[in-house]
Image (cartoon, rainbow, N blue to C red; front, side, top):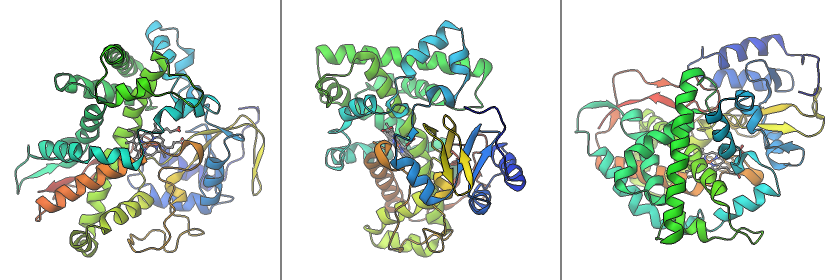
Length: 416
Ligand code: HEM
């Protein structure tokens, strides 16, 4: 923060945010709805050490102007990373700080351009068969009529297995790969501190080593997989990514693509099973499934917050945010802004205009959006087609409450 004075905060907003970010709220949406309508919808949060931005137009504006709102927030997002003198942590930071998600142009433009051919809707269509096969294998562990928790038991395994297959990770390394990628993902979770953080960082370093060994192998003997393609792709600057840069971006695909897609599988099943008329419609007309998925992305986006840093003083109504402050645009609050969507809290797959911000907008718009959408469509279609008796289980479902950014379902019992 570039200022020594504490930012003013609406007293009611402070109370709501203390519950929201303190882990006391199972359902965060009433809190977002309230925060969006209080004052200017922009509130300093002690818990996040950031200004929470809740209104659709403001959130969209932040995403669309990367000069005023920088993504160079790696060190701000977990301050302990750069204070640390532990050599393992420093080695971790050497690689993790290269993630292009936390960079601005020209670095961002150069690195992101390596993905310009691999995540197009046309090129990902070839992975549909892989996704169906992974789904079939993972769901075959469960028998019909038995209740089980689909989040840890299935939804969490699908994206890792798919990205491992797409990257070209050999079958025998898959289990380790899954463990390391969970470790790496948890380094971004602010509640993971102390010994837990050391363990997560050790797992991440093993993941980096492993990815580097795959890069070495594919550099000598390319295969028909994503790693080989990324090694040979030139950036828009006419060079190729250095090995350490490539390791970081491959690891980023894991951390950005796993929990998000897992969440969307969970909320997809939840919304459809809780709305039998819509479910019947989606079963009857396959074209309605992608439309329903977009509505679920609007109502219950897997990532609730993004992060940006102001490069100059910015005014939102009467709220002035100084230069150098961290902003947390709240995608989940923006997606239910009544200024932008009619009846915003209703699940309505027939709304004519659904420009939600679940993948955000601007230059950091999710690079994996076509893959995430395809995965969830294929998985849900497979489950709906093969399990006509599918229903919600009797045990209560639970949302994650210990993470401000990702608040999908921690558990969602179903009966196949
Ligand atoms: C339904 C699933 C997904 C959702 C809701 C989602 C959401 C998002 C959001 C909101 C951002 C923007 C972050 C920001 O601007 O700060 C983002 C960026 C990103 N996502 Fe996704 N994502 C999903 C799936 C995936 C998948 C499957 C992959 C890759 C395998 C992926 C890779 C990335 C990457 C690399 C970025 C950084 C892009 C950049 O900074 O230019 N995502 N995602």
